[in-house]
Length: 159
Image (cartoon, rainbow, N blue to C red; front, side, top):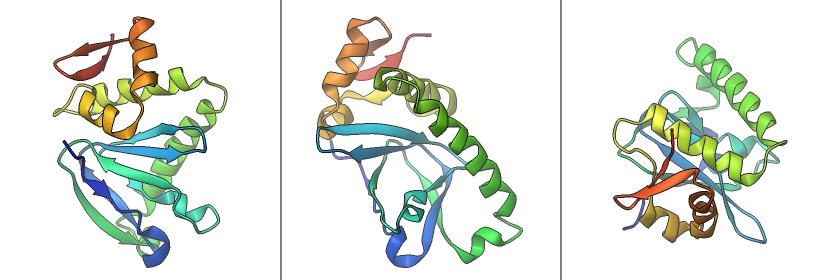
């Protein structure tokens, strides 16, 4: 199964995505391996990595059906988006700051918890996505530590 790729066009078009509904996974590729760095949910803005040296460095994949709109940089100052973008950035930066002190295992756990809390469509990360993205070993480590279960071809957080 191939997961739809939400093209990171942001650096070329001066725009980002506003997720109206759905779950989007962000993967960052290092020299060593892929890293599932963040889960975006309804109300989030995707593509803000373009503000880091004007380069889109993260790949985004839709884990569920997504409804989104393209928001130009100029629109972020409009009444429609200003407050929600500010709130998103506040939460996003708190999450990213917390990640700096955590092992990758903890970040994966948090991302699985986030999917569980915010999605009505999926309960975790599908095995097919995990294999396709090359992060199976990371999820299997959590499985060995009894932090997740693999049930119905989906890695789910143990609550």
